[in-house]
Image 1 (cartoon, one colour):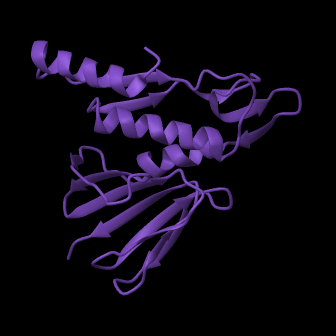
Image 2 (image 1 turned 90 degrees about the vertical axis):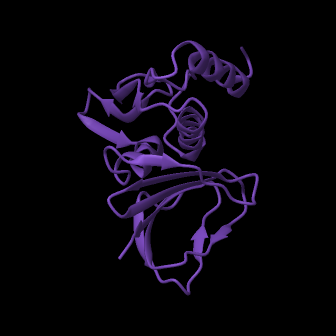
Length: 187
């Protein structure tokens, strides 16, 4: 049970054997770690788990445990302080947005891969729109060379869903410790 990937692979095989057409939905996921974390550490953990659940378990939906939290726990997308009525948005919130804001409802996932074994990559298509999610958990910048114009949205230590247009002759920089969404609209 300590090897999450091995467990969900076994569970997927069991589901395929016994309930091949049953859709799986991931609900109420939580980091299960004490202390608030508003930075990229827990955001990358969230992105990794979403990636594994979609790519291995083939989930059809994914929900976080709690959106707004008042606790000293690594659970909320937004932390609320009821005393002074303030709030703090986490990088988990924005990384979740890299998925939820850009993947169209009803999009079909397709197999996507790259030569860099450190990078996690997911691909989705719907109505002439291709969306790639690129998770770079390393300390090194990576590059992506699109074959056409596209828009990228980056969440890292400095940026939160920062959008930029990329031409086909330009390399898209994949920042260290980041989640980047690439949106390609076909003509």
